[in-house]
Amino acid sequence: MSGSFEILVAKTAGYCFGVRRAMEMVEKALAEGDRRLFAFGPLIHNPRVVNELEERGLRTVDSLAQVPGGKVVIRSHGVGPRIYREARERNLEIVDATCPFVKNVQQLAVFLAEEGYQVIIIGEPEHAEVKGVLDSVAGKALVLDKIEDLDPERILPKVGVISQTTQDLVNFQRLISALIPLVKEIRIYNTICLATSERQQEAAELSRKVDLMLVVGGKNSANTSRLTEISRMNGTRTYQLESAAEIDAAWFEKVEKVGVTAGASTPDQQIEEIIQKLTYLGGKVGNE
Ligand code: SF4
Image 1 (cartoon, rainbow, N blue to C red):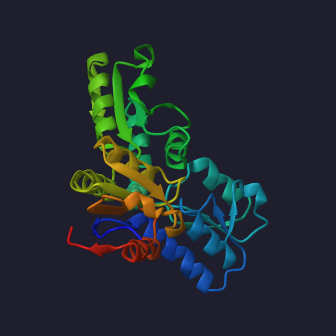
Image 2: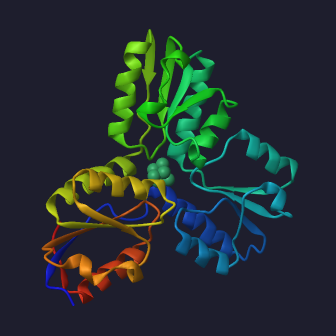
């Protein structure tokens, strides 16, 4: 057992509005006894939650060709028009859990393209949300993840910029600053959602106050990994974990304060489980 330490829990830790909404829509469908309920991609980036839902009847598919009929859930990341079209052609009913903030990004992309701007999405090219936004403009947009991706030769004089909702603000600002000297006209929409910016800001502040940070959430969750990166950028020793079983008592030697935060797809129960283990190891919850 390690010595005593204080546990500071981030107020913003846990489910965001969009994930909570998607979970409620699926819970409702399961409660109504829907036997043929399919999620197009893992409902949220949290393997434990997805496993539990699958045990209760939700099936995850990565292609609509795998759906024999029934209802298909569009998760909070959204999809582009191609998938809606395919679902209609296959006579599938849609449970649309696309987060309204993601819908807004898709609509802005369409608007910018219609107004003749070169659409630039600042985000991860392989992320489902970015793929959906890209499809909204029939693939006619440039995706930039990091400053190294910026090739001045590919930038047109009139650009419209939007961001993945879970984008890191500093990265967004850095790319905008690099784009400005390259263009004649730029229209910028900061579409980083409030849930994301609040979590990132709190993770940055909390990690400066503590000796050790624990970030709870799926290893495949982009927003959780971003919190981990932000905390590490402050030089704070940080571990990202999915369950209390991953905690090693040796981490807490000579540690006085431990910060806990969690991604937008982490349920309260998983955060609680971590706090219980920390309490067992000598931690006491303090006021953040
Ligand atoms: S992180 Fe923001 S945009 Fe994404 S699902 Fe949550 S509330 Fe919606």
